[in-house]
Length: 238
Ligand SMILES: CC(C)(COP(=O)(O)OP(=O)(O)OC[C@H]1O[C@@H](n2cnc3c(N)ncnc32)[C@H](O)[C@@H]1O)[C@@H](O)C(=O)NCCC(=O)NCCS
Ligand SMILES: Nc1ncnc2c1ncn2[C@@H]1O[C@H](COP(=O)(O)OP(=O)(O)OP(=O)(O)O)[C@@H](O)[C@H]1O
Image 1 (cartoon, rainbow, N blue to C red):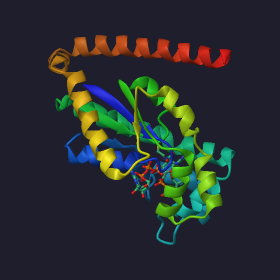
Image 2: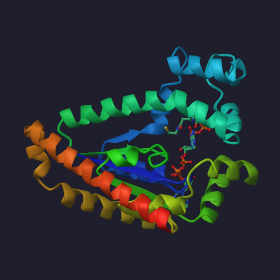
Image 3: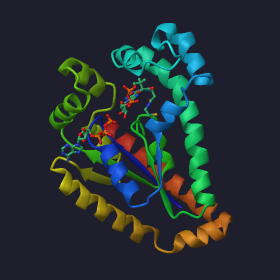
Image 4: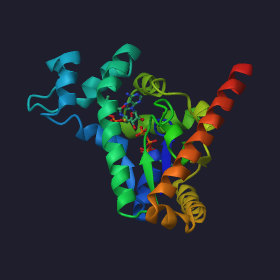
């Protein structure tokens, strides 16, 4: 099975791409959605959030006040890291089991939709990295329109992630979403054709013979880590 990592900058259009892929019956594992499920009332992650940030980040009914927590962590790197350390391990565990379940059910590929794919180093564990791109100016405009937020609030969200111009250095495929949504739809269809060609029929062999799947995954991960090391040493030279 080909595991595709889908990422982008804030408001570059990753969720829009993800829902277009879903409409074509491609299985999506949505990290934002899982990050909401693992902090529902009664979960260990929510208990840890209360211990770290206090009861004031809760609504009266015990649900997390996401706006309030967002206003705390997007402006403060230390607090953001504290929250990430609570939520990310639980999200990763769920993503791993969901990926495995798609493989067991014989899917030829699945897409991990993860905003912090590169920041969290998950890009090294997937077969292909797709980065949805648009300029920072467009990001800011779309973010303010979508969230009805002020420029300052939008800027602090943007700065909480690696700049999009840096993320594209990690991409196998860059999906440019600077134009209208009709253009994006056409690009997503091309993307699906590319994946279909790439996967071909070999996924059936890997599925029927797990040792072959294991060998090819190990080889791929080794190749990826070499590529990553080369990119880092080139960066240092620059
Ligand atoms: C801070 C929270 C409560 C704000 O919730 P809110 O509903 O306002 O935003 P939502 O979850 O829909 O996220 C919107 C976007 O913000 C960005 N974002 C979210 N969390 C982070 C983070 N810790 N660091 C950088 N960017 C982030 C992502 O691009 C995401 O797509 C929430 O984002 C959260 O719990 N974040 C920590 C978990 C996390 O890192 N999620 C991202 C995927 S694992
Ligand atoms: N090509 C486009 N033209 C105009 N608006 C767009 C386009 N693509 C996406 N949008 C709009 O931009 C906003 C951000 O898109 P989306 O929510 O898909 O981004 P995202 O990358 O998933 O953001 P986040 O990481 O913050 O969740 C949405 O309101 C969406 O409808």
